Length: 59
Image 1 (cartoon, rainbow, N blue to C red):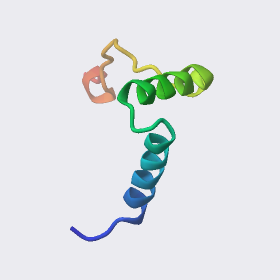
Image 2: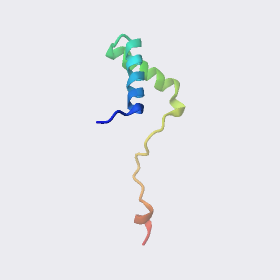
Image 3: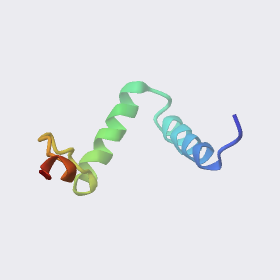
Image 4: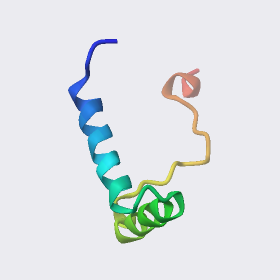
């Protein structure tokens, strides 16, 4: 696989976050829950209702 700088950057950030919580899975989950609560206005919910595509609505 050829190197991907974006993936490398994501992995670096994830590693720094993990290091900041002592690589403790419970603390890591709590960290992400706090982030989600703090930024809930930025989290999109998936529409659970299936809608028909334009092609399906056309007769």
